[in-house]
Length: 298
Picture (spheres, one colour):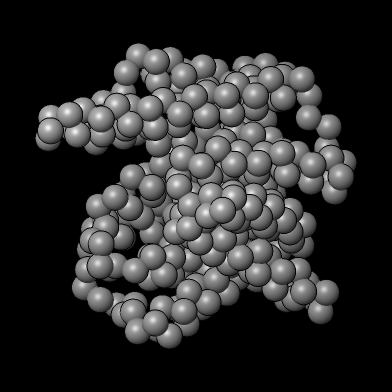
């Protein structure tokens, strides 16, 4: 039952994140990207600050402001800036498809920079997955849109974020880490406004509802993911993260009148298939290692 609940929470989180993406894409027609980042940073950051304070977790404990948490927050800011910029410029289905390469990038980063053992099977899967990314982006061909490179920047930044999380002291609360991540968007948004020479746009009454809904879906999605990791096995819920691509393609077709072409669909299929294979292979190797450890102990 716990695993079923966890799966439902993950699917709900992916739906919430897709609705957040769709709302951000709508808002980008009226507001500069930097202003959207600032609004997200203030709104969601305040929510997590209140939650952490209510649980008597210090936002400014020394352990929370060491190198690893700060690198994570910086990576979060870069990822959000690149991702929201991509959403404002290209199809939501294309953004979601390329973004599914994140688990492959994390596995590659762990092998290259953390010394984790990755065999030829997983390296092959990573290579095939990134071939899927190339099918979607199509560099050098007529369908190439340079704005898709922003999604690759987001993927790389998310990989750095998740890998740096491993070095954060265990006594640092996830609520505090989340506060730092969202607070960093305030600074990255302000920097982006300055770099692009944009000015703040005064929201109209209808915009406040969209901004509020964006914050609700952002916080709800995050909370659902955290709950899923607490109540269920990671091996049971992880594959269902790919439902975000399904939701995003549906949103693209139904809301934005997008029509993903054959190469995009093939590339997305390759990314999902190799991502699932990589995850299942990691689970298999972990089970083998546990069996060997028990045999040695016996």
